[in-house]
Amino acid sequence: MTPATWGLVATTFAACFVEMVEATTIVMAMGFTRSWRSALTGTATALAALAILTVLAGYALGRWIPEAALQLVIGGLLLIFGLQWLRKAILRSSGRKAIHDENAIYREETEAARAAAPTGGDLDMFSFMVSFKGVLLEGMEVVFIVITFGLNADNVPAAGVGAVAAVVAVLGLAVAVRRPLSMINENALKYGVGLMLASFGTYWVVQGVGIFQPGRDSLVWPGRDLAILVLIVVWFMLSRVFIATLRVRGPGREDEGALGRAGDEVAK
Image (cartoon, rainbow, N blue to C red; front, top):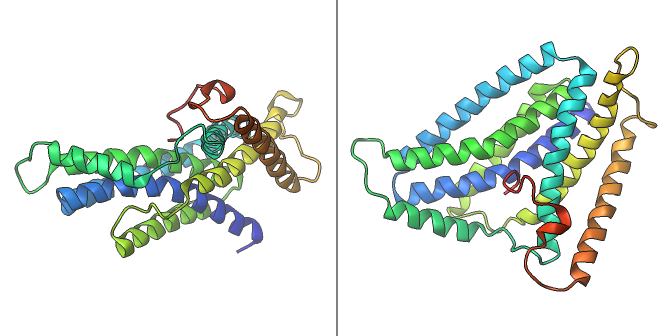
C-alpha cells in the first residue's frame, strides 16, 4: 500500500478505536450480568446494519454529488465532529470536566441490567436491545468517519479496513482482559483524533469552497496535502492556549461557555 493509504487506514483505525471502547463497555456489562448470547447477537446485528449503511451511503454520496460539493459538506461535518472531540479533551485536560471513566460506566450499566426484569425465551431482549443500541449509536460516528475519509481519499475499502481492524483490536483486548478497558487513556486518544478530524475538516472545507467558483473545481492548498500537517500544528497550538487559559482561571465547574454548548452529545 502507498503511504497515503496507510495514513488513511491509521486515521480511521484511531478514530474508530475510541468509539468501539465505549461500545464494548456496554456489551461487556450486558454479557457478564445477563446473557452473553443476547449481548453478542445485538452487537452482531448492529454491526451488520452499520456495514450496510456504510456501503449504501458511500455509494450514493460518491456517485451523485460533485467532488467539491462533497468536500464542502462532509468537511464541514467532520470539522464539527473534530471540534466537539477537541472541546471534550480540552475541558478534561484543564480539569474542567471529569476524565471519562469506563469503570464507572460499567458499574452503571451492570446496575441497570440487574434492576431490569427478566425476559422470557431464549433471547434476553434487554441485553439484546441495550447492546444493539450502544453499538449502533457509537458506530454511527464510525460510519461517518469511514465514509468521509474514504470518499475524500477515493478509497472507501481502505477506510473500512481501518474500522474493521479497530473493532477486532478492541474485541481482542476485551476478551484478553475480561474487564472494561479503563487502562486505555481515552482522553489522549480523543485529543489526538480530534486534532486530526478538525484538521482534515478544515482542509476539505476550504477545498470545497471551489464549488462556488467558475468551473466548480476544488481549490488547491499551497503545498497540497502537506498543508494538513500545518493545520494539525495550528489546531494543537490553539487547543494548548485554551487549556492554559482554563487552568489559569483555576479549578471549578465545567466551563461550557468557553467552548460552546452546542452538540454536547456528539462526542461523549
